[in-house]
Amino acid sequence: MIDARTAPYAALVLRVSLGALLLAHGLLLKVFTFGIPGTVGFFESIGYPGFFAYLVILGEIGGGIALILGLWTRQISLLLLPILIGATMQHAGNGWLFTAPNGGWEFPAFWTVMLLVQALLGDGAFALRSCAARARFAEVH
Image 1 (tube, rainbow, N blue to C red):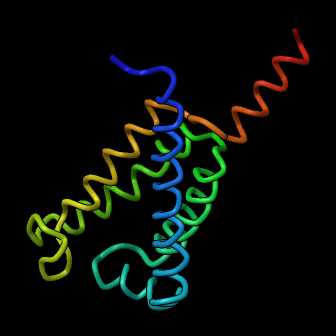
Image 2 (tube, rainbow, N blue to C red):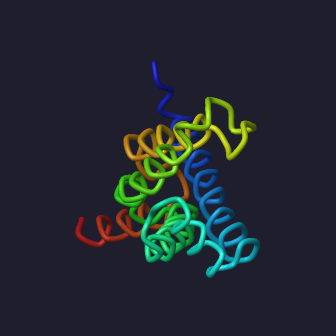
């Protein structure tokens, strides 16, 4: 049975963790470590169009911030799925563990599942979207 008292906090922990991880991958890894031109070059080297790198960077940074703040949590989680499915597909031939050469597929696959879980759970506690919705509801009633 789900504990209604703690479930919103579980959703919060998952939401902030996913958001922080996305932000780290988009900003710290792709922008500051590899650089945008390096990320574009990598995408092209694995057969993806170079402009996909910009979409992924934008999705990871923007989506990460939105999740941390609790803005449109369900929608953002679902919109990020193609990025993680693409990452899973890219790593699929490398083996199971992410410590395999070129990284395995278990980490992006797990990340994909966690985004689905977040979409099912919703905002959780301390979400800006939830606070704004409650304020509008209170004004109407």
